[in-house]
Image (cartoon, rainbow, N blue to C red; front, side, top):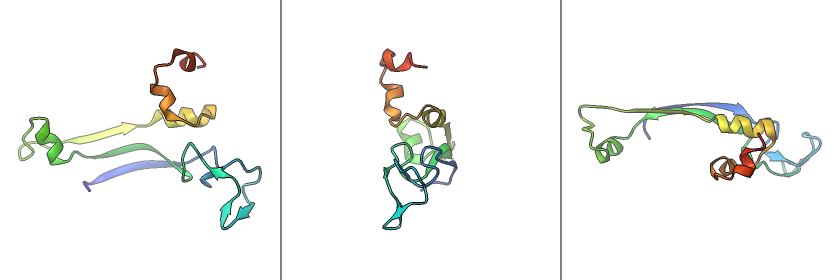
Amino acid sequence: TEPSFEVDITCTVCKGTGFSGHPQGDQRQNGHPKGVRCKVCKSGWLELGGTGMVHPNVLREGGIDPKKYSGWAFGFGIERVIMMKYGLDDIRNYYSGDIRFLEQF
């Protein structure tokens, strides 16, 4: 992989357990909290920001000489913060173009 960096935060929906749907986070079954896998994070953590070097093949395919230029990509996942704030479980809703969904906000 190329050099990269990311910023992760604890999921507030499942309180960092990776599971949701359990009233007490300390109840355990087979080493995991009772409940179902958290639909927001699936692991207890959310990646908010990620950065990394663009692979030379990507530059090459874009018509850029990777021996002369390098690339750096970055992003910030504000959608995930909004998902936690409003208790949403599917990020694809933001990009569906469904005005009925967007009018809720």
